[in-house]
Image 1: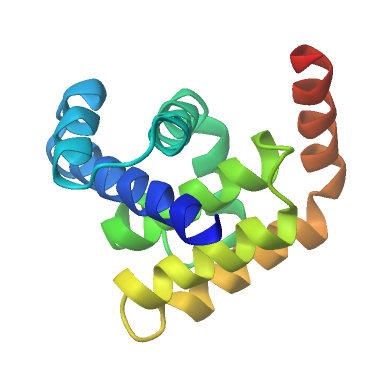
Image 2 (image 1 turned 60 degrees about the vertical axis):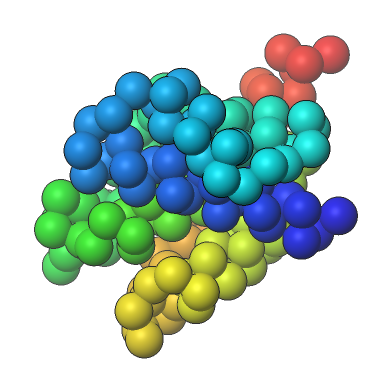
Length: 150
């Protein structure tokens, strides 16, 4: 199951990268990604959920990136690192079904696979700092999400 969910994260990362770089329509981008990398219905829904969730919460997510990586403005980060952080933060904050440490670990794995040599350290540092310093924010969003789903 982990590898399939990781595949969904990879598709979401590729989609967010394209949306970020050239501004294509998210749904069109996802359709193309699913044609190139077929996923089960469940995992395609998860990839779509990640993309839509990141885009819907972009302002808050980017604000956290700015706060915990102040030496690197969000718009000056590599597109890959920026979107890996966005996915990691989205899962940490808004996806209570994903354990927080798993969200961090999966983001680090994406950074190892797709980022530069030091990306994984940077991603781990930023996500770790958010986890250490923003637990009340994270837990309040996770609790709201669980209550809404019941």
